[in-house]
Image 1 (cartoon, one colour):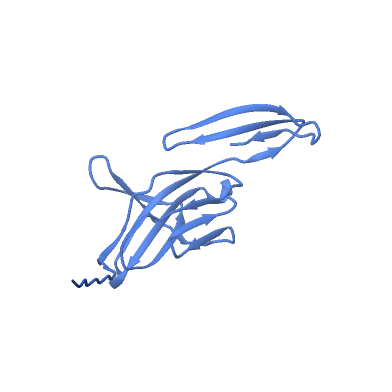
Image 2 (cartoon, rainbow, N blue to C red):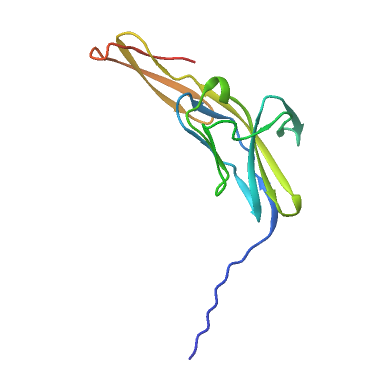
Length: 166
């Protein structure tokens, strides 16, 4: 009794598609990775832009899509890195004054087809040394809320206090 087997890759072609992205909250001074949730085949490239002006396009009763009107292609500086293998954007370290804003991810497929989605990046402040006590803050950031838990402890050898600035 004989047996024949064959295996091969199956490529299902499809136009690029970027899933909707929600607001992201980062912490100043920390590293943040923003994934671009892309589907479709083949994807020839993924680009990111940052802007301040946007327009809302209404899709249905409760769905809106943000479109950048003044986007600048990233990276803009050495703190921003694009990873072409997965389309993610990494910012390290985050700076509240220059990194907060609207970001847009665009996937480009064959024959010039593109898809784009945007997200709002909000950035919380960072630890600043000051005084003789240290306040340790644990941030629990969920999709819907931010909760701050404060724990005080002495740090007399260093002689400083850590404050959390928003």
